[in-house]
Length: 501
Image 1 (cartoon, rainbow, N blue to C red):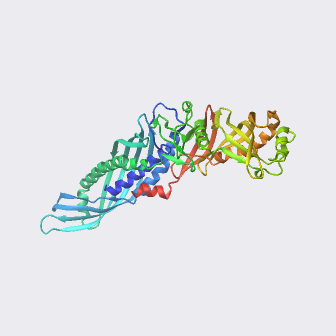
Image 2 (cartoon, helix red, strand yellow):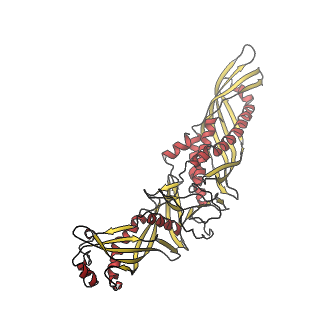
Image 3 (cartoon, one colour):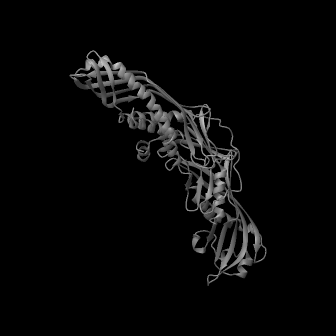
């Protein structure tokens, strides 16, 4: 088997391995730290990977070339130089295959492999009169098995790595039948040629497979992105915290799962809660998204000053019972109207601390600590601070999977708001009279601002061509668990990278 043949085989075997590592991305090797994001790929998922990968392998191998075979053999007419050239595969089938997990990694196995090929033969007699002849030949191989053991690790920067521990191939029965010319002569020593071809296949296929896994495979994994950019402010880091963990029925990966500021990246001042042990393997894949992910997002955006929002009179719909003018608060806050009669107002909303998402088995809730600075605005557009309210907003959160975009979305619904008087330039007053107005502000402005981020969705790190299917979400203590199956259709870009390096 020549380099182009083995390259095609190993590229397609690599495609199976890469899909198996569908969620194993990116940097920073950290042991003993709870993951913000965890994935499990079960035996059911691995079996689907096998089903998708094997036809790709079979189809691609039909286009490969096999190196010429040549040598010298003794025949009834004397010693002859022979060659078998232009060997082309016409059939390649892998009826039985498996991908399994073990304590140290993956084992890819294929058995009962059969193939057929056509070729041209030629011989020339060594001695005078140097008789020569040529014709065609058919090659058939059956009962072949292949096994490759692969460990999946992580380098010092946290990128996943592949390392082939061993490869074993057993070529079964190999027959060559010659046609045309003095084919009867070739048929006399076809077993000798078959042994030569079998030996070549046996050594080169394993050498090529392990070489590709250890070189091109690692180069391909290195190209996976360390982070996913969310917008111009934030990115999320799905770094592997340690090498993937292999159990008898699944492969587990633990990821950092943390938002960072693009311009000023710093660690969040809190850590993820511990996740429970894996308890189910009925679906192809499971994703644990901790509330730590959302909390780090809130930390980034609040620290960046993006959770500040001014509400001006022209932004309030005319149909609402409260308008931003002291006239609307004449009866609720008489002191405000007395000091600034019929004066436009501007509200400065601000999250004073990062929002906190708390997930418990029965629900998910957002808490947003903040304040509202109430200004009056004069005709010359200058503003005077009237008072500052403390405002803590509580919201219920619904989480869903958008399989089209491969994101997890969150949508908040207003529950309640607690208000308090922090400071006042108009004297003290009973803030409870502003509860209805505060609720209205939260419903009309605060919750939509939260949903602007939540509806954009948290990207799920999957290989191009993977689509989540029939996903469901349940809540646990500090996490949302996505149980899902998936489909895979290799993109042209992925196939080009795998087959044409």
